Image 1 (tube, rainbow, N blue to C red):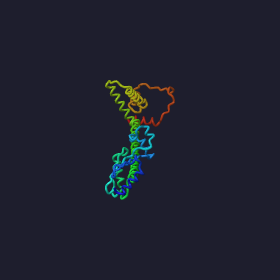
Image 2 (cartoon, rainbow, N blue to C red):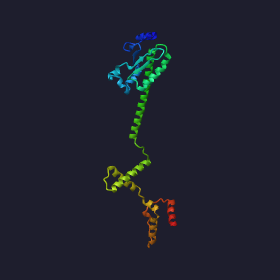
Image 3 (tube, one colour):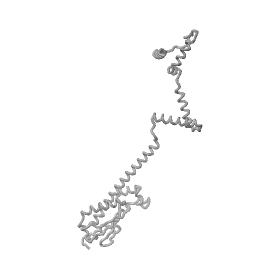
Image 4 (cartoon, rainbow, N blue to C red):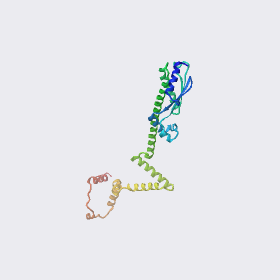
Length: 264
């Protein structure tokens, strides 16, 4: 065995516990790494997608660490002048995250050629794994927040309905009245709301009837019929002014009516 490799294996026995380090052979070993960062662990406890990492609800509140990964290293004959082969086994990281982790660690280890690099590899891998997990948790939280906002907006639109203005209300009201009239014409039974629409239409029509004066000003034939009546009378008509109250006659309106008579 290379002397440098032998010295590194001996030193690893002092760095890692028996639970953390498993020496398979002179050219292979497995290191187990825990995730024990309090803040990151708390974030994982409250993440909906991470419940499978904890055995039960009690474990979620009490545990101080969870298994992060096992890393298996296989050394070539020329190690440490060449990088060891290494693979990760984990339930915390996703497949694409493992690819990113492996890429980052490999790039970093290129500066460690010629010296023992197992401790460096494990430490850096743990650091990078925690960074990747934090970034994922932030991303997932942002996605959940965005989804919640969209759902809230959709619910608000449902309860808010279509905004109504004066014109759109009149358009809807007329369409509803027309529907009520058609059903009434066909002899169909009308619901309470349709009956109310018919009643509203009747009241609306009644409220728009012209007054006597409006009819008089609108239809000059009425004035002409009165004039014809007066011409046909053989006897003088005596008007008792005392039978009428004091009237305030608008000269401008009176002149307008007389002018129309003169033109005809």
